[in-house]
Amino acid sequence: MSRKQSDKNIRGLLAEVGLGGWTVEDPVGNSNIYKAKCHCGKHMEHIHSTPRQNYAKNKLANIKRTCWREGS
Image (cartoon, rainbow, N blue to C red):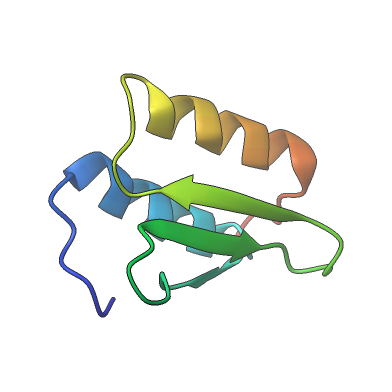
């Protein structure tokens, strides 16, 4: 990652999303939002690097419901 992540939950979320077959794009410019795109190309999620409580757990559950490839 090109930007330093201060929250270990977000680093873990980004890593786990990558393991599920999604690609994660770093934020552009002054943005603090990562773009995650699924392996089939039909789905995209935004991941904020300054989340609220339970954000990582809820976001991962939503991504897994949408499009998930086990063992990637």
